Image 1 (cartoon, helix red, strand yellow):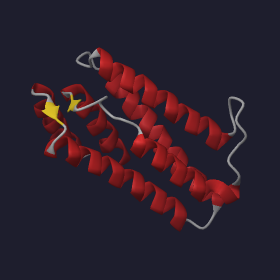
Image 2 (cartoon, rainbow, N blue to C red; image 1 turned 60 degrees about the vertical axis):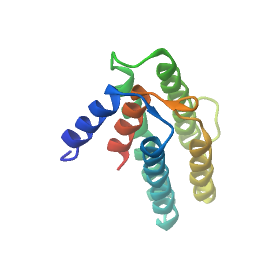
Image 3 (cartoon, rainbow, N blue to C red; image 1 turned 120 degrees about the vertical axis):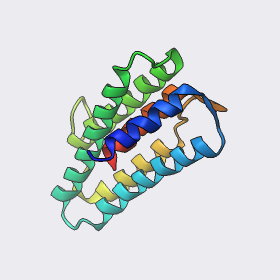
Image 4 (cartoon, rainbow, N blue to C red; image 1 turned 30 degrees about the vertical axis):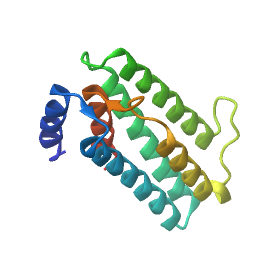
Length: 150
């Protein structure tokens, strides 16, 4: 929680001027991928399935929370809002699959490591921001999520 004022200040600066997909957006994307990788490594290092499910569940809960917070911001534009909705749907599907809800079969204990890797790969390959330019709103979304998962 101590990082929140610093992250909020950075988010404000990012929102004041859209960034091209250069060093700033690449840095945010790298941090996002590093956070995903850390979660996957944590899951793989945990010996028991209950612990693995707990790690994945907490991560997905934090993702949903970050997406809800970002969605509540009035400054989010139409394309960024669509990105939020799309990401939220994917995270909800991962949660349902992990828990065996909404018609999904629960991920088997033996498959939790593979599921974490699959989730990481799918989330890393999903386009964030929708193209060459990453808007200030998209930067805020990513920063809120990073704040909650790190």
